[in-house]
Amino acid sequence: MFVDYYKILGIDKKATPKDIKAAYRKLARKHHPDLHPNDKEAKKNFQQINEANEVLSDPEKRMKYDQYGEDWKHAGDFENAKQQQRSSPRGSRYSSAQPESDFSDFFESMFGGSGRSGRTSQVRYRGEDYNAELNLDLHDACKTHKQTLTVNGKNIRITIPAGIENGQTIKIPGHGGPGTNGGPDGDLYITFSVANLPGIRRLGDNLYATVDLDLYTAVLGGEITVDTLNGKVKLKVKPETQNGSKVKLKGKGFPAYKTETFGDFYITYSVKIPTNLTEKQKTLFTELSQS
Amino acid sequence: MQTEYLIAVDEFCTLNNVDVSFISSLKQTGLIEVTTIKEAGFIDAGQLQQLEKFIRFYYELDINLEGIETITHLLRRINNLQEEVRGLKNRLRLYEVYD
Image 1 (cartoon, chains in turn purple, cyan):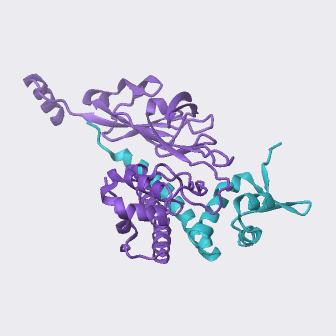
Image 2: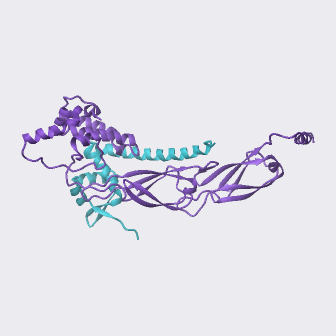
Image 3: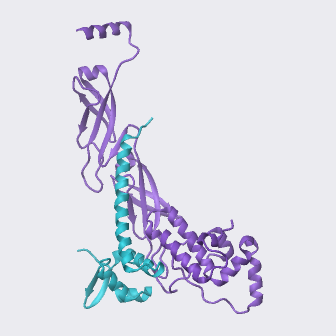
């Protein structure tokens, strides 16, 4: 798909190199990913701005773009014409100053995968940081376990410590993109999305659940079985337990991240009133209400 | 004993085509720490990512030191606020209804 680089930079076709530089600087300051951490939209905008500048600030690329831009599928004609005009090979290629820059299909088709002109071709750059998202549920997140991830075609086996929080990001050093000119590799950042389970919710290291209690057990007391993350737990219910009352199961909550401690499990009782009463039951309730 | 990875300031500046005075200015404003060993300056490798960011601000976006200081302060605040939002979102999940 054709990309209008002039529109991206907000300039017209007669813009001078000075205008292009000024427009690029202004937009780069607005959208640079360093100024918008974790903002995918800003990164995408910046890549477009970078690509527009890459083409329009290079006289040769700009000429090719102006001539064939909208008719880019025939841009190969430009190369043939150019080769007939010039016998000497092209000058030195620039190295990548922004290794994280991706280019659109349009750019790749017209100009190949060449990188951005940098301050110097010898500059060593740290590789791009990769971001990945991993979905877990509470069962997965409550125990330390190993998991294999595929990031950019590479399998990485990581250990996920028990107690990881929803939205928490961990850094895996050196598993990002490769460095340029011998620079160090980037890092991999994994953000965890930990889903609650139906009936069990988590806040920090504590777990919360609402348990249905029949009227008779609530009034007379008794024993019920409750599901926790570590299996079923038998629980004594005190006589005359009120609807909405809470009990705490100490240490039955979630493991705290990178410690040996556990949170608590809070249970809220929801007393259920019997329905579809028989005539006899209705009579008994009436007697009870009058006693 | 903890191992520290130090990068010589001179070597870093040569390889990255950065003025040594820029590193000195960053040190003076407290944006980075420079360790001096036998009169030579060294940067802890842990600061590399941050330092590269400052270089991009200064050389590629034409942002002066005062601007870098302000941006760094604001980015720290954004980071803290994002953490707070994450915590609040997790609290809200307590009240989500499951069918």
